[in-house]
Image (cartoon, rainbow, N blue to C red; front, side, top):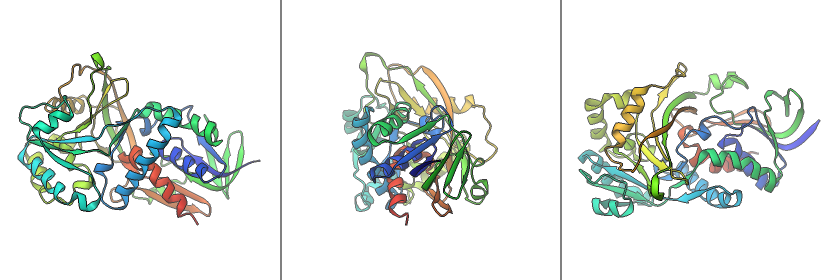
Length: 375
């Protein structure tokens, strides 16, 4: 029988963060992944590290800590990571009102933001459509990685740099009394961390059934690399995004924005659409996204959702080439009232899950918290 101090099940961003945090504490770590590579939501996202959108207090601080870890780890692991910042854009008076209100108290809550006029927006990004722009909000804290590259390289770096034992293409079929059993091996671990994302059925389905977690499906797209080394600059977020992130929930002016969207464009509410854009290191623009919740999510993508996203995108983004080369959907685990789901299964076994769409943003900080608090 093999032994490790810590066993981690799942090599998405949450599992990788747990493996890193454990290894940095000097623990021996084994990392299990049933696929030959991670294929879930961790590679199907914008690659945005997005502190500005996180709820004030603990979750925002967690995001800022995760940002620090990305900046430490990425160059060591050979991962492209750029500090691009972000711009929230306002083309309607109610959007501008939300940004003004948020700017009024953001500093007291630890956010580093500046309200900027249309000219200042243009100076930060030549990709923003000038017609009708009232202004924007600049934040310097956001990073960009290519999730496909990052999630592929991190396990290799963990093995090389920290001695993490990798067990890819290895299905964990049972966990019992500090033991992890696969088809070919049995491991004993002092601590076991289950980071299985949207898979609620394989391990401890009874706990997931009572967890409050639900699945969320999102649709996204990517363009070809932009010609002439054209760069987007900061991450860009349209006004719909103000409806989505917890950071803006305290804004009383958000009610008017939500009411307008509901009355004038109910299809955005129906499909949970808000529109953002990021750019990879080789120049592709990543575009999204939508949100469909529940257990009856269909596996087929809806063309109408992509069309709505692209139509809205063209209202604020001007780029040389917006031809779509890739379309996909992802499914992640989301708790409707919490930013994470951490549960004790048995002595020495925890589920770490439920980071929703903020996996790239919060996982490193969450993993550190879990291990710090694990008696």
